[in-house]
Amino acid sequence: MAGTELPGFLASELASSAAADSLFHVIPVPLEQSVSYGAGTGNGPAAILTASQQLEAFDGISQPLDLGIHTTAAIDCRTTVESVLARIAERCSIALADGRLPVLLGGEHTVTLGALQAVTKHHAAPVGLFQLDAHADLRDRYEGSRYSHACVARRAHEDLGMVLFQFGVRARCLEEERYRREHHIAGLDAVTLHRKGLAALHLPADFPETIYLSLDVDGLDPSVIRATGTPVPGGPGWYDTLAAIEIAIRGRRVAGFDVVELAPRADDHASSFAAAQLVYAVMGMIERNRPANPAT
Image 1: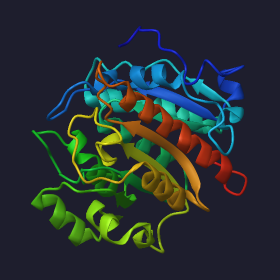
Image 2: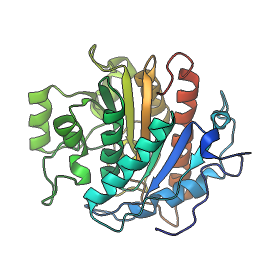
Image 3: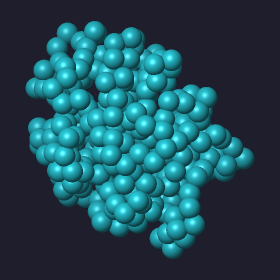
């Protein structure tokens, strides 16, 4: 993927995509090193960027691209995962220092850790993590690695001291269940959402005022996005997912976000388009939330 020219996010609609003119700095990270079932996440960023050319600039409420969208060169992932995370952190730190908002396109979920390292270092106040995911990702190690996609939330909580809120989880191992209970990890699992609806979504009273959004596309029901490594039935639908994100960021400063784990398929343009639409929908929410809560 390194050296491959990728289209800028929504470049077909942008008058200018210069870094200095843009709030949103989109960072493609085609990392695929620890997938455990279906492959293809390394092709996710290119598929999202390509699909974004078909998006409408007006999202139905506002036009997020008016705040500017700059797409950087893809991170070179042909090295160790630790080196990739360092490169992500450096790229995100540059954006944050300039008052911009990093938007990562994965790639496997591990890429989130690089952004979180930068975000937690940049912000003096605590940063909370809102995680859309079918899986808890709270294993300490998976297949011998502490930096597997299955360990992302554990590293964020244990190593970076972040407060977590997990939305849509419906697959976890006993180790993860025990960790959740021991550390009182908050969230709204898919089965509770099904039974009680979004009225059951309550972020803890002590959840930080600054929030990072990590959006694993397998968190959505496979009827919305099926092109992902481990699709799990019974997830939240499109509108419940958007509403949950909107509730989470209301009155908070968004430090950045990512959309990860798309594994595009040649016969499934809908999944890539939905992932691109998710990126732009979140940009729109941030735009509309921003006057009271600037990103930086």
